[in-house]
Image (cartoon, rainbow, N blue to C red; front, side, top):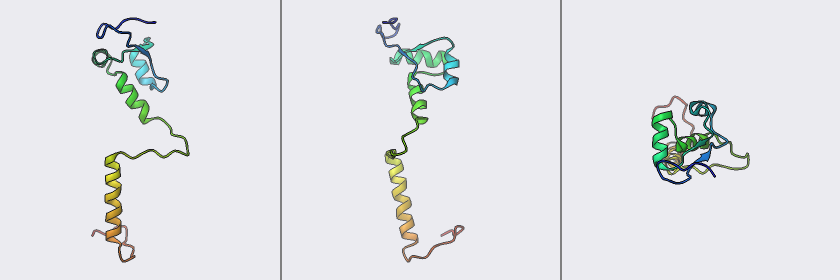
Length: 104
């Protein structure tokens, strides 16, 4: 089953995710498993510079979505898009196109 963690006394270890970047694998050396509990992650972050949550965050950013899927924008991205749309509609409400270097 695997070793018990010194921090949570559970078998919280898992294998590195398949998408783990090479530079993180090199930092862990010959290790093949990584702690998933909070205490184990804090220890690994101090010792190695990375932890399981870091790997998931990096892996998620580099995940390639299928061509037919559209990622759901975050709330801040939706607000930014709405602001840009409103600004565009307001500034060009008469149908005229402003030059690219137009300041107002």
